[in-house]
Amino acid sequence: MPPTVIDLRRADDPRDVVHRAVQMLAEGRCVGFPTETDYVAAASVRDAEAVARLGALVQPRPDEPLLSLALKSADEALDWSPRLPPVGRRLTRRCWPGPVAALVPDDDPDGLGRRVPEPARERIVAAGRLRLRVPGHIMVAESLRMHAGPLALAEPLLDGQTVVTAADLIARAGDALALVIDDGRARYAQPATTIAVEPSGVRVVHPGIVSADTLRRLSSLMVLFVCTGNTCRSPMAEALFRQLAAEWLGCAADEIEERGLVVTSAGLAAWAGAKASAGALEAMAEIGADLSGHESQPVTETLVRQADLIWTMTASHRAALLAQFPEAGGRVAMLAPDRQDVSDPIGGPVSTYRACAGQIRGHLLARLATLSQELPGLDPGGTTWG
Image (cartoon, rainbow, N blue to C red):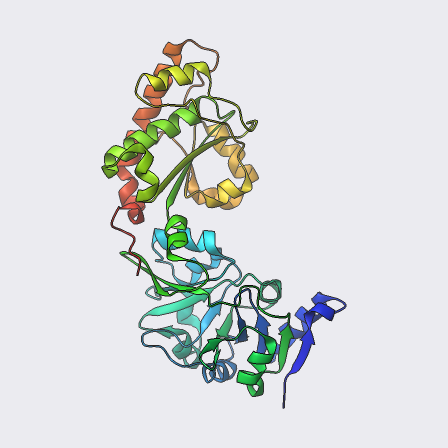
């Protein structure tokens, strides 16, 4: 029997389409969904028979799972791959939702993959790895939100090409599907990029819409320093950290981004575009750091989401950040390892700024000593690209 086709562009209420798709998934049936890159066939990973039907739609690749798992968000990646290396955590947080699939380790007995029924597990695990996706299309996102558990995805090919329309999906997989949601040609109409996240770094396994250069930038470690106005303490911390990190990495301060390290600063009560204070300018100039081009910026949701380490100058800064962005809890800490506030030099003589800079430098040295152990993905040779 051919599948029911719903044209999403003509639907009176897309929520009704979601409800219908979720109901069919709960009944053990397969549903065709649009994503930003292609059209996929989906089934509940809890239903081994439905997963088996999906598996028949794709050609096996050596040492790769037949099927992908679609998750609600990047936060769920650690539920499935608890030992995901830091560089993998950075990439998934920055790329998802989006057109990237990640082959990740299935090497932890506490990972949710161990709870999948064995017949289904055989199709979502291969060579000790899972393939995870968080598609960016609203239909997949809303269906996952309402469905209990993740979805298994088949990404079939038609005549060796990515399936980018509902008609192509029906031509390839129609007999296996109960419902197909048609949203026109896929936005990118190109394959998702598949990466493998490994202890030594990341490599591109199957090229796609997201280039290796873009992924290399997105895999960088981002450190964010936070104070109040972003004109004194946090800009000095940023400048000092650039100097120290350059020494550690064996490069010039303006080359650290090429080595995978992004450093910035912001203020909880900052106005955009303010210059660094005169005292900060002078204190930094004395040690060869130029703050003349600094422009303040406020803390934003985007900055917080992108940052891997957020170091605040005081306990009150940390508390304010966590109150506004509780999801960043594991990435926010006071700069001082002993949790002592960095004194605010605003309004004081340049000697006060020098003392503040010395205090910050001492804390940074303590942090830098442990940074490579905490985040080995930062090592210059730690990220490989194929």
